View 1 (cartoon, rainbow, N blue to C red):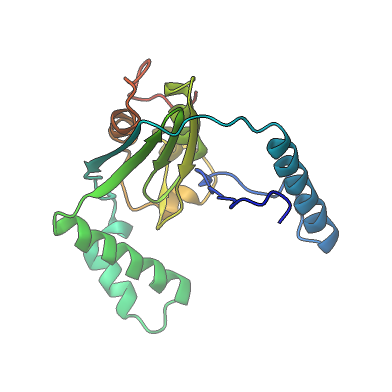
View 2: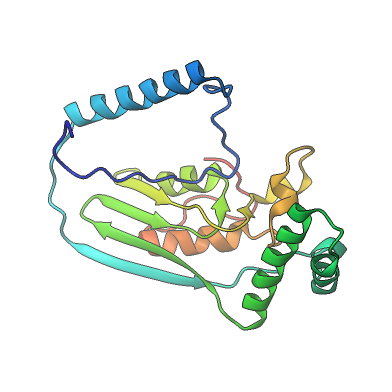
Amino acid sequence: EESGVAQIYFSGCGGNITMGKYNDGTPEARGALADRLYDAMARSLRSIRRQAAAPIVWKTSEVRLPLRSGKEFEEGEARRLLADAGAPSASRMKAAMLLSWIERVKAGRPVEIACLRMGPLRILSLPGEPFVEYQLWAQQQCPDQFVATAAFGMCYVCTDQAYTDQGGYEQTFTFVDPCESLLKRAMAEVLGAPAKGQVRGENSP
């Protein structure tokens, strides 16, 4: 209402990011967090710079992510759990989601990584719920452009290091094996920037 223009929110890569630092669940904390977000948006609008939106380029890349290995991620185990009426509903829901992913992969349907380029702007779309390291890496590849990331879908997409980290639940709710180098290669392609530095095993900007 104050700006008179449409506002677009990008969730970004938040697979391993939480609001817990600023929100402990109380009404007071939620209000304080809302005030912080509003203040940041208002300050951003006051410093807006208009730039040409051309050229406009739409680039996509198909990626075939590897299925998650391990007994608990096998198709037979997922079907057994789904058919067990006495199993916890959360476990059966996870099994159903896993089965849908397995069937998609076996049907040869890849996931799509996309990027809309408009002048100095890059709008990057990633599959799943990726870790924030992927967003930071994408921004590093295009330091002279503004990179916004849209990424919030089924299951987590971890960094390779996360599979060996202790603690956290994201590693238990990802349906793909380590694929960091594969994703980064496709991201660099659609961003229109050569991958900088080492790709394999690179987990931070």
